[in-house]
Image 1 (spheres, rainbow, N blue to C red):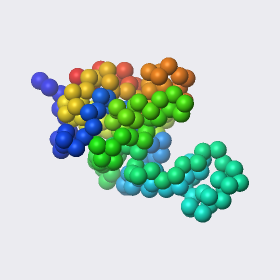
Image 2: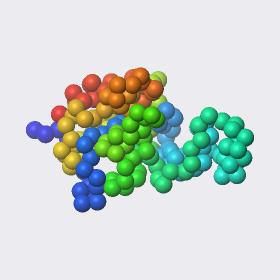
Image 3: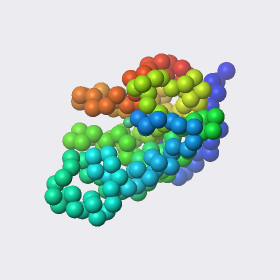
Image 4: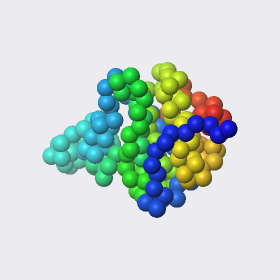
Length: 191
Ligand SMILES: [Zn+2]
């Protein structure tokens, strides 16, 4: 018996030939309402050191070199999709188109290959503090299986963001998708 997977429409003719999946967490709380829109807004805004700023403020502080990380608005949210609790159930949101490379797993000075070859999925929540709740965990498994089947992705190519650094042979810069999200267990439960 194949394990259950989410029933979502995936059009291979409009997709890149994805070789794997990188899971992330939002690090923000998953409150009972919709949180995905805030993530989309964040990624499509001017940002300095993780804070949204106006275009004018961005230019001004850039000129004065006030800040460490300057990010201009991305074309769309960096992930191809995300999951969250909303009004008592777990739901899936589509992110950027499956034909677009991601903006979620680049490593400055090392490689952009995981943005180019791996889908980016984000679960809303902070899983450094607590593991995903069983229903969220199970939903993420079912979603992952749907993409695995569509693109013939093996479980070994389903990784957490922190494992991107391992695979590139550089020190981990993040705990994403959270220290309490056991990726070995997640992979074991996929198949
Ligand atoms: Zn991440």
